[in-house]
Image (cartoon, rainbow, N blue to C red; front, side, top):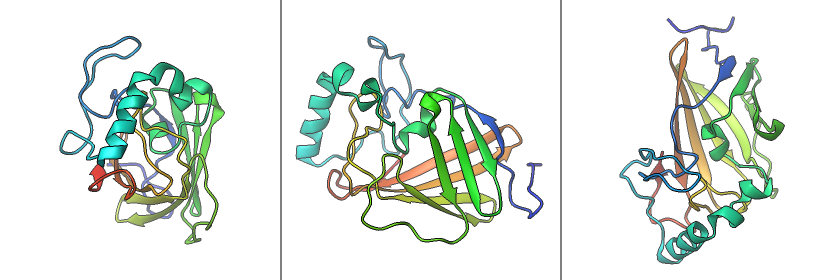
Length: 193
């Protein structure tokens, strides 16, 4: 059984921490300086970059220790913040799911009240609007800037990126997190990880 709110929705509240190495590289990777090895989380194994974007990704990788926005104390953006290895806490009401992250005291607000996303504004952490599909919280995240990366290996996105996140409680101690990434400016296809 999973914990539930008074309204019957799954209760996501608590302190959580990711258990993978996606923050280092979304794809399969060997150990490198400051990067432990890890299994990839991208469906299909490789991010299907357009040729110019692949070249940019390779340049990002070569300069990753200086160019990574996180190394410059910028916000990690979504989805990267969801798989950093720092704990985060979820608070939940009928109208909103709030996430407070240990990393640099960052936070996210996921509006579940039916309100619409803002238009014409780019955010470091995107604009998150959620809805429940059965026991899964589905979150549309739009209005990103292009200054965040997916990981410390230089995988990146454009400001046109759109995300659909899915949070599903598997048991009282496990939330399954999935995200579908659509970015018409840098990839050939939709990517999931």
